[in-house]
Length: 59
Image (cartoon, rainbow, N blue to C red; front, side, top):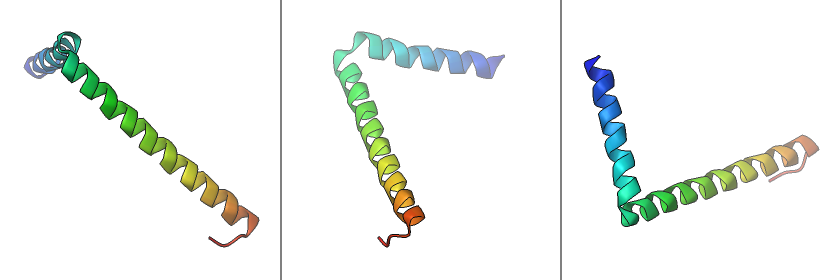
């Protein structure tokens, strides 16, 4: 019970900071945008490499 209550309180603290602080909210959004972009590029590169390898083309 104690661990779960601490987890919930910590999570709500982060959510409240993001809700009321514009600078933190903007920083959080930028972080997730960058992570999404990097992940998308990595997936596209791996997919292109796999397609090339299945066709028998060299890198």
